[in-house]
Amino acid sequence: MATDPASEFVTTPEPTVPGERQRSARVGPALLFGLAVATGILGLGIYSAVRARSAADATLESTTADAAVSVVNVVSPTASASTQEIRLPGTTQAFTDAPLFARTSGYVKAWYFDIGAHVKQGQLLAEIESPEVDQQLEQARADLETAQANLRQAQITADRWQALLETDSVSKQETDQAVSALSAMKATVNSNVANVRRLEQLQAFEKIGAPFDGIITARNVDIGALINAGSNTSGRELFHMTAIHTLRVFVAVPEVYSRAARPGSTATLTLDEFPGRSFKGTLVRNANAIDLTSRTLLVEVDVDNPSGELLPGAYVFVHLKLPEQIASATVPANTLLFRAEGLQVGVVRDGRAQLVPVTIGRDYGTTVEIVAGLQPTDQVIVAPSDSLTSGTPVRIAAAPARARP
Image (tube, rainbow, N blue to C red):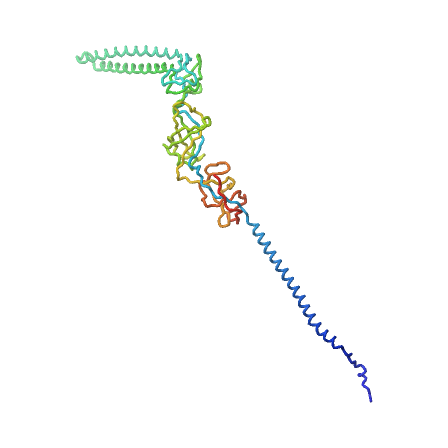
């Protein structure tokens, strides 16, 4: 029987143990499950890492956005009670102040009062010797007597010619000439009378009298000094007089307070040399025009000074009461921004900064008075940055504090 050669190569599998087959059957699913668990753990780690990265990015973005918003401190304007009165500097002046000059040239014969003397109107202060004026007066009086004699003669002649004319003893022409000569002599007499009066007045000016009740504040002459008449450069001021029974104080009131400068209103004056004392004055008039340079209103305040305690030229403070209609507020001085557009402050509105133009009244040093531009509810930025612009997002650092006046 022939044998198939191929059968020689047929391999018969070795018999297997039943337990080993069961173990191999369990290893396959376990391996797959392990791979699945490992894959899940790996995916979960990747997901966690991605999620953490996204959270970190979001946190960084939020932190960056928060850092971009400026944190500011704010303060609310405080109503200024001190605006019920303004305190302005001024200088006292004599109610009447006059230099005295000579109207007649000559030499000082005598003087009778020195500085600080109280004199009455018309009281003799000094005398001047003027021989030229005296001689001119004598000559003028003589000329007047001559003219008066000629007038009497012309009067007699005119009366005689008029009487002769009635009898036709003289002509009408001759009578008219006599009457005209009388009129000319009357004019000559009047001229000489006026010249005599002029020289008498010049002679009267040899006596220097006080033009009003007051005090001598300067004496610039002595006996024998040559005096030139007039107040020009060659003239010499003999005396200087002031009347201080009432003093004037001129005050420049800022335009914003011009409504307080009402004539007839009361003003109070204080001086450093009288601590704790005040003097009552009256606002008598104002210039009725704002000075274009200083933007102030010139006001005159008169104060009675019967005892002469107050001296002209003293530095005083004038206190004027303001009408109640003037409302103002105070804010710290470090809230102000000095820009080309003018004085401004930063105000927080709806989470953004807004630059608001303001008008200041008085400067108290650490605080300033704002008379226009702010509302009591505004939140004003303290110490704003120079680069602050309107619309910039800002965040308030703390609750607004009230500003101290």
